[in-house]
Image 1: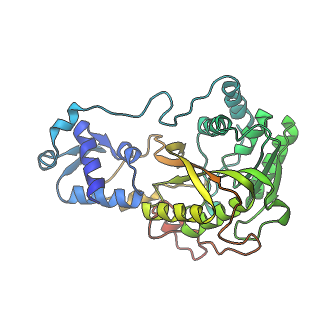
Image 2: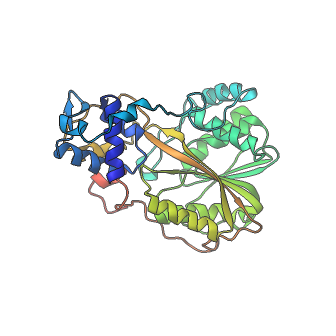
Image 3: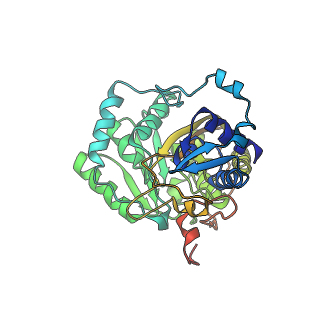
Length: 347
């Protein structure tokens, strides 16, 4: 908690900020961030005026002002992604935005939300950079980002297969495939269920933005690895907003047990909108000790992109023929799930 409080105080020393600006800078779970912020407010280190947070005199005494003499920041060109795209990727972004302009709205019962369109193209550009795109068979487990459509628009993969629990997405992807001559296969699938046998070991690349409960991560990653051929490759997102570093450590151990090694972990690679017509992932503000204004559009929810490679033969930690029980809410780490604020026993 001390590290979180120090980050907040150092940020406010540089300039006063709104709650949303501070949250955007955070690299800790939202739950821990809110606790640290409430503690600092209660202890008199920060004050709030018209929705803007300031250091008090007491707060100023806690920080060494010499830190202002040293400047560091993330590359503005690539936003810290380390990958930049050009050539046909530029027109791909335009085509992708145009094709998905009537996409289905996210639903909270499926814990959906989608990353920015430019982040989708950046993900594909990274795949291309590593040789994981052209003539490769790709499987996506969950696709509310509609990555499959952007992949298909490149005309480079040999096969694109989508597994998703939401049949609305299936109908949408099929329609877009017909309209634009895309070759995308879709099958409705619940990640808890055994994998269809014909998908096991049939793909070169796996991609997902998994549910971030521990059981959800286990299910998504185990299913994805089971779909990979020898020396296959995987891409998935993992946030710090929902997932503590304790959970990150568990994920690393899972991957090692499955004969997988992490090659890249690019922090804040993808940004997500958090307010939709049918889904509000910002109800946690009721836990603050002071009022905050409406989010002006800051995409504070960010996901680290992790790439891994299978060393030899994939060894999923759960047999693809077995059912995997999945919990949909992590009450220990998460405060962003809307169902935490409703009287429901379904999750």
